[in-house]
Length: 412
Ligand code: HEM
Image 1: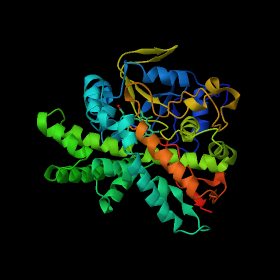
Image 2 (image 1 turned 135 degrees about the vertical axis):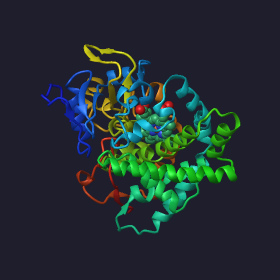
Image 3 (image 1 turned 30 degrees about the vertical axis):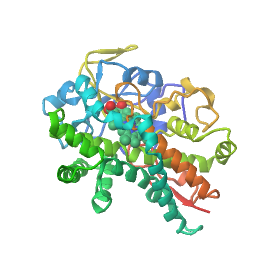
Image 4 (image 1 turned 30 degrees about the horizontal axis):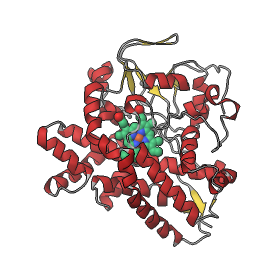
């Protein structure tokens, strides 16, 4: 998978919007140096940064911003509009797409609810949801293939994040889930992407309206109180924050759990390390984040001033696309064993939860969800197997997420 020699690439290289082979593509891009120009759907050119040490450097650099509003001339001039397929990724107003004081203010509003302590306090609830979902699966029978992604790993984080934000289960939640999933799919058209964004905001506006009338002990009500009490939050920021938290809380943990379960089922000797106490579920999470990171790319970042990346000049205002998935597969960092799924490996410093100012806010909660899911799943179904050869698992049609469309298993 990883290659040391430089391959000649047509420049700028068009990233595969279908994400058919993210690992091979990243390996090719890695050979081109600290940063290489790529084109994104809709013809936008960006600097792709895929080597681990430069990814870390860019993520920690104050001269790099996620705010298109402040630092992307094409956005400021109005050239980037809703007819660009990745528009939702740069247009929503929330901590993700902001810089400096605005980013700190928006992050502070919700950060307290996602500390390690608060996430641990969610554990009993997460375990109860896990047990309920697995009990439903057990009714399937042992020999009929079950899509574990659709029936379990997609439902657990959705139920947890909806519970936290006071979003009631029902047809509207399913529609919200579908819309947010579309936003993570780089191969859809601009119309589909923006329709999904409108749909998500429409559904979230209904949640906010309901919570304004009937506030509860949930984070949406807390955000509304912050908005209404002292105007620290605009209406766009309120909806944008709700959107970000729920979107972030769904597809990424789903994909992490799906990738990890697939890896354990194809490497039973690694699962045995956990069963024998030589490794634990955190090792599974960390090794999956290294080798099969869910968030492949998260568009976009912008140079606040000219940046010299060891001889590659990224000019002020130019877009940058950082790869979170490629670093863990960098042979310069992990040597000859880079392509081995190895729970006993030491000294990982993966970037799967990001790094620097925008590092993942939901990482502690994602860990609680994954630990609960793995523990109960492998206890309840110790003989579970993949229902198809591993190389027939289909990748999601996107370069934004690195995962499988479905995970058919026989529960055994
Ligand atoms: C295994 C699961 C998850 C993975 C792999 C993951 C990955 C990431 C990554 C790589 C970033 C940084 C993006 C960037 O810098 O461009 C990020 C940011 C973020 N994540 Fe997660 N995430 C996960 C779970 C969650 C959960 C459960 C939530 C919500 C409860 C969440 C909410 C966020 C938020 C709000 C940000 C933006 C932080 C900021 O801009 O300051 N994530 N995540």
